[in-house]
Length: 126
Length: 107
Image (cartoon, rainbow over all chains, first blue to last red):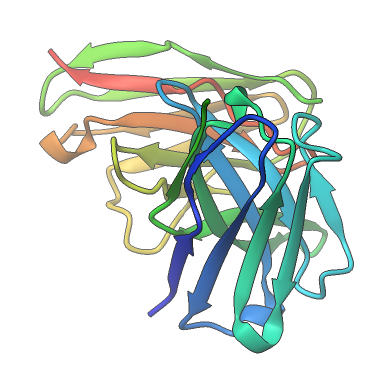
């Protein structure tokens, strides 16, 4: 059974740092791309960051670029999000999600988030 | 960035109704479109991927259609457990943008 379990959330002051972790099990972690997605209170879903299975390709939303760092540890089957220079607008539930993919017509490789963790709440407030 | 626009933002419906939610992309995205269901306090759940493929384990009353810029999620025979917020997401290019969501409420 695929499981993703986030941890590391909590209350942090503006300008502070937090490191989120996502422990993966039930699948070959190293062969799957992963994403972080967040949801601020009363708001919609917002994609935060992507890392390829090899770790060689990384993308960030503009809202977190230069402040957040995504990484993964294959030996620990874990995904991380190092968050620094935190702002009030970073307050949200953060989800890690596995990225599945399908190839259609032999040419279109479409990705989607097929498994999600339960989320960890990050609150940035003084 | 590719803007994803969902409509309506909310709707009221009754059990047994047929519900249609639309999602429009700001540029053509072929079939790089997924639909998720989100309930309060729960993780999002993938319903439809690649515009029209039903995720394993998802009831067949959910269906998706469209390509290019215009997409539709249809829930036929709405069930009590379907009252939730629904999001479309494009994975054509980064940033992987979501629509603003459609909240389906009990009438």
